[in-house]
Length: 167
Image (cartoon, rainbow, N blue to C red; front, side, top):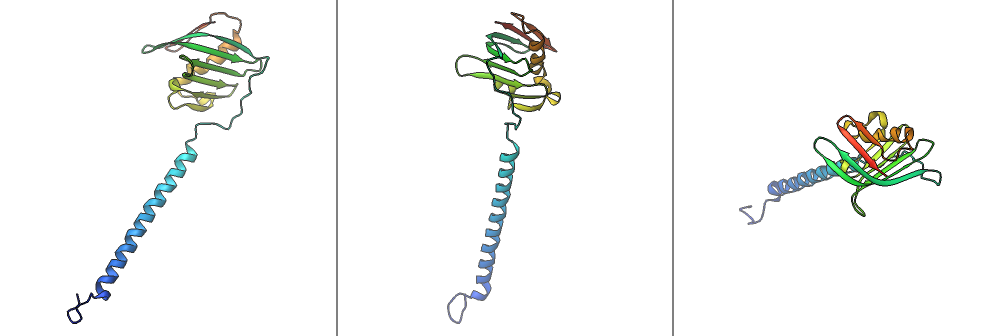
């Protein structure tokens, strides 16, 4: 307060208030920009879909449907399975539990694979040679089906995983 006029001394307290407001707005703007930049980075770099183009199934693809029993030391799962593969080496496998509940969806060719669904965790896509260890058994099914496509009830073991198909 200015004692002579009874007013506020703008010269001293006014500039402090203005500088405080500028500092607050600058801090808020910096935090907002950092948040915005990190959000854009996460959204663009964490995409789960790949740019790899798989062949679409055609009339000359072989299809088999039936049941799969998947077994590990800690898990046993029985579900419906649809397997499709071409003579060119393209492969698709879908495991479901009832209508509309896809547990695992796998698309694979000679070098690249894409895995989605609850059994795949957050999903994965990339070169087959760089697959995470927990997906290697699933990715080995393609070669087995292409080699032994005529077997009615194939069984495969990969490490501690067992795959038993009933078509």
